[in-house]
Length: 491
Ligand code: AMP
Ligand code: MG
Image (cartoon, rainbow, N blue to C red; front, side, top):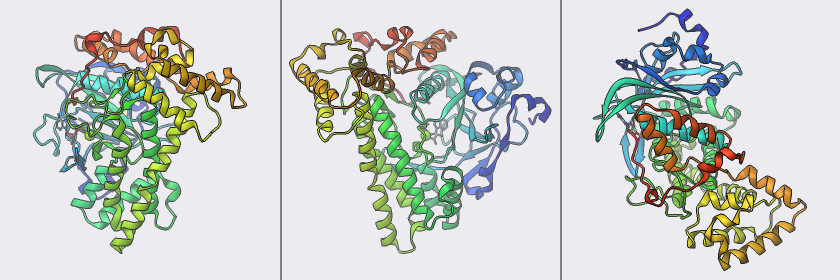
């Protein structure tokens, strides 16, 4: 299965495999299961360029073989990573049951990215699963992750989706597909939980040192760097989740195995963007209790980070009580970091450059009106940005008019002009998001072999703050019949 280096040289792959220097309990060396009859579906050429890869070589048959798991670039040792995690609050052993990490690609600029094939066949961790993925969920991850990137939100990215030429059997037979996922790393809160529960202290330390080296090298030589590791992840996650909240992104399955140490969004399963504003919004069909509802995401962030803190305790202090005290203090910083970032972001969404005590009331009053009048989240801010008040019912209400007068007075209470305020709003309120009905119609066509709408949607989502004419059609709400949208855990 190995191919010669000269055959892949012009693709630009430049692999290393530092993860296999960790104790072997952290992975299982394993080749992808070859796909029967692979074909290209989509390639992210701009990401390929960013990674220093040659797009035309990736589009060739040789490139296809790598994406399909049918040939392994020289210099990689493919592995499935071990991890555990709390799923909906319950602890379980997990691991890559359908993903193979080819290795870490070094870009010409010196950045390092994991290259992972998702849907690459059964592994040691597959349990009852088939190790495969279907075209719909893989393209869904491609579209939403790329949209998140364009919105300026840290995320894993998607380099390619290929068809395996095989069927996968879910409720009905579906086209099998493999997504090539690009990530700063795939180390999860659940990887630390695995180390804490199934490994010894030396292994846990090895994982923590590796994570620091890879993501937070500036703390390598600082005393009690493991406590600082916790601090850094708390900061990154507070920042990440504030960004989710500001655009109305609902992850849908914030299990601890789906929370990264790098601070990137990962695992786009039943995620969706909120339309009608409500803190209780849930789209996922498997989240019947609303554990991962929009308004709960910051709290779940804290819950998950507390599990990371639990896992790190033996490294933080030999005295358990002291370790708990120190770790608790770090996790408790989440709220104030999150609140400050969220409020800053909301001010920008309302065109406010400076900070005043009354701002939070102004923000909350708007949300109360939006919730009561069932206003669309993205389009309310879009309309405020564009002064397009004729488009939405909320703007005709007395409560809104009162709020509007207050907001205009507040805008006058800063040095910047109204024009400058509108510029700030345009830069912080997306004109388009991946609306659920648009994503679904694109995926339905793709399942039938027509990628036209996927390409069009990706193009529209590339510059969400552009406010272009092409985006207008995509900013519209779904027909009434499609409002009760549900997502299904994409396997
Ligand atoms: P996810 O819902 O994608 O976060 O996955 C949760 C766990 O289920 C992980 O351990 C996955 O590797 C595993 N898993 C999901 N789908 C499959 C599949 N089709 N075959 C084997 N394992 C799977
Ligand atoms: Mg997962």
